[in-house]
Image 1 (cartoon, rainbow, N blue to C red):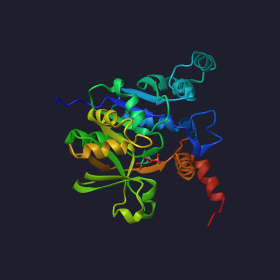
Image 2: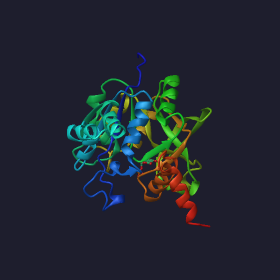
Image 3: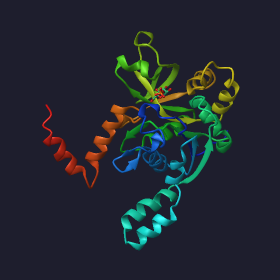
Image 4: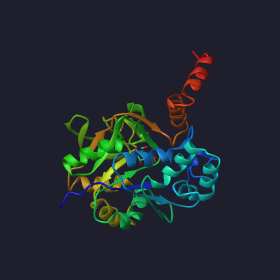
Length: 291
Ligand code: G1P
């Protein structure tokens, strides 16, 4: 098989965001901002800074704000130009040109594997990236770039991992396997949300993957036959018997923006780093005199 560059990314964004209700009743959870930048924009920037050229969002009901966010806004742009607000104008305009954007709709929320399958025709016969909306990694080298580098070495699917406290394994997909290089594990087993007593591993899957076209075949074969929702775990376990799959413990600070505490931690850290308000935020936090 010829070796293809990873140029496409699937961003599944069809979930209801029930953990953030009522904020997410009428707006996508992916549009919740870290200070001034929606979580989804951070993911798109991660993809683009990793070499991705085309992005397909798998959307659903009440997700129109996402489409608008990455589209041009003629009236706003002319207003900003008229008022000489050059910096804001550039911020708005850069969104449209970062990548080529496509949208497909997942008809019903039937699991993250089903969401990926919805993008099959867009991806075609090439490897691609998958980024789920909740996991942000703040890193010098984008987390997705780190995965692509491992893919380019092994030419097999790669999944992002992070170490979690063992008592938290039941919140994650947990993998077991053999370490083959620094931070790289060849996967032998994937379990979705095991009890701490069921595994010795604390290596958790986070929502960033490089997948190959066989993933779609596997998901297609399994659709309808699995009980409940079709998950990535089904395809991963099925493929593990046929070709090597790798996990990479990514470098950087990971935030779970799908969780209220994780979202607030991300907000505080991004606010502290913000070039305009960082200092003010630091002074404010100090003034709280928390022990
Ligand atoms: C999903 C995946 C799980 C993964 C987690 C990472 O679970 O099913 O394998 O570890 O995301 O955030 P969810 O958090 O949607 O329940």
